[in-house]
Length: 438
Ligand SMILES: NC(=O)c1ccc[n+]([C@@H]2O[C@H](COP(=O)([O-])OP(=O)(O)OC[C@H]3O[C@@H](n4cnc5c(N)ncnc54)[C@H](O)[C@@H]3O)[C@@H](O)[C@H]2O)c1
Image 1 (tube, helix red, strand yellow):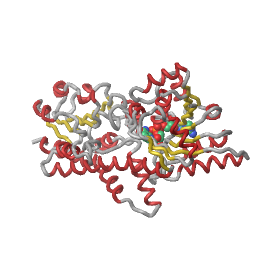
Image 2 (spheres, helix red, strand yellow):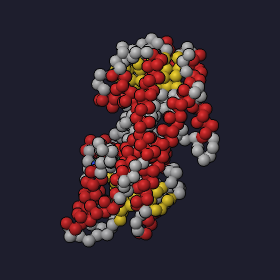
Image 3 (tube, helix red, strand yellow):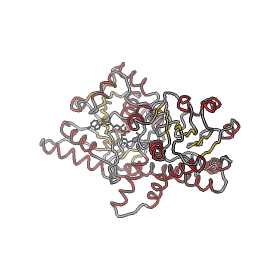
Image 4 (spheres, helix red, strand yellow):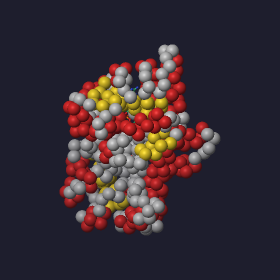
């Protein structure tokens, strides 16, 4: 099938790669000329494991290309994916201006039946909004063309995006017509996953409910970690024992320094706003936001309890992206932590395997090192913000010999605390008071 994907960010590029792989012809569209130029040369503007070779292969085969012209892309397309950003506005709502712009542009160039698919995360009612924006343009052109708008939310996780798109747990298809449903089923025919066919409004809500539920699970265990810390209980053992219950499951039960990224914070906030607009206060969501916002303060409190006044202390943060295997630093807990440590007067050094440049742009005065060992040199404490495998696998004896002190604050409970204590580190994990510094 001939597909256009509008927006070539994390979601758009992965959608192009995974649909291209199963035999569809893809045109990727973006307003960012530099991105399009890079992509046409097989260079990925983002870090996402495994995607670049797939894109290069499809470009070589001639079944994929990128353009800045939606008009050109729409000439033969059967399906258009909208995969543009929906960032959070200051009042907590998602900004739909990019989705609106795309809808109007589609209406300006549409001349035959097309299925328009919302892949961006958008509030309930957005499929109808996209429908009416397209209709407005068609009316201006005095054209009567039929079309369908489908909601097909994306559930990929950065760092595992290709794997998730190839083998999704489910594909949610919010369709308002039988014709659109058949086209979408044909599109995904080669992907072996359960297809949940429902209405566009239901599909839109499934996305927000799923992300908010995952954020709830993380936040629950983070609050448990705070209590475990007070009661000499190890939250890792607790999560393990809880997760063995099939009704609970082991995923998203790892205590840490809070969730971040471009999705959970904005999606929880958008769902809470949807509730407010419907005159319903979502108290669970309010608590989640509050606990998540204070998780870095709580963590910093533990650092101060161990190290005393932080003014003038050298502290190294390892792993700065919001999670491993991505260069995405949007809403990364490391950003909050760096800011708070600087405010306390600490001398901060950082290292991330791929996100260094992005951090440098935000904190030009923070020293960013090219490798973890140089970052640890002379540090009094090392803080693990993101559990990159290459950080977990560091030679910790060497790190110890380079440091000026011996504190490790493991914000992801990723390291072997017992082993580190044998190496004479003072190790502190999140909610693991049994391993607490004595
Ligand atoms: N990143 C994720 O892990 C993830 C996962 C699931 C869902 N989502 C949702 O998918 C959507 C996209 O997220 P992302 O992380 O890929 O965003 P992104 O910011 O990485 O990419 C968005 C792209 O859209 C482009 N764009 C903006 N306006 C455009 C226009 N008028 N025409 C063409 N291109 C335009 C931008 O230039 C940018 O390249 C969001 O709604 C997000 O919530 C993201």
